Length: 285
Ligand SMILES: [Zn+2]
Ligand SMILES: [Zn+2]
Image (cartoon, rainbow, N blue to C red; front, top):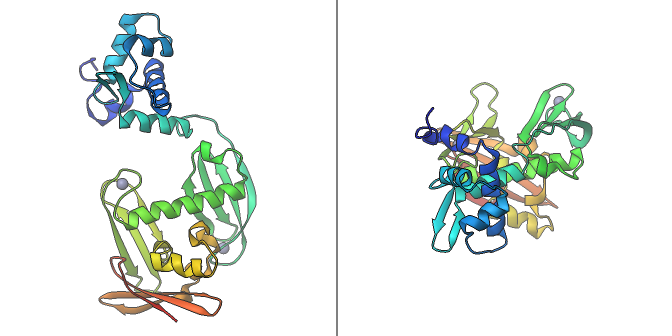
């Protein structure tokens, strides 16, 4: 590849950052932004990055311009892409520090009730049932795992997943910002109901009980709040109405109409959901 070609296209965006000086430049600019400083001049930026050769420094800086760095009247500023890249670096996504830890959790298998074991390894947390294998798996950047026990990592990951699901239910993918189409289907065999979120532009595909997808519906949040519970801070795995299939009934297959019911202290709340995961009706009794 020639210099003219190497920063074009999506792979080019990464190759542009494949150099320590350039990473140091965007980090210095991000730190200045964080400290609410004005733009940095060429010489100030070069001093902070610690490169003696002005020609060489200029070469690296020019590679970052347009996509990662912008020059304004008061000096150089990071673009959003640079701030996101620095965020990814700080989250530990690109550091290679494998930590492996396994322990039992306070959660049990939705299928059989056995205690689930969790392992955190290479930025991935995985929960397993001795009988049913992997029950839950998701990425947790090393930064989020610092000072958290495996149990706490699992709780964090579960609640973090809820935020991703909430965004996907609203139609946007948290990975690539593509469009997500929610779909509710009833298996023709055992009649089990599952909601699925698929991104049209990337590999994101989430499948879970319908109750999990409507957990952050305002009626759900306020029902729990009225009973003294912030349901947004409750892991999916601790909520019976999501886990137990009796709480989800098929009202109609064509068109798809699903009823999800949750109960607290003798009060109950029922949601009617269609095949696109729209909440059509909420009844409290
Ligand atoms: Zn099990
Ligand atoms: Zn996507």
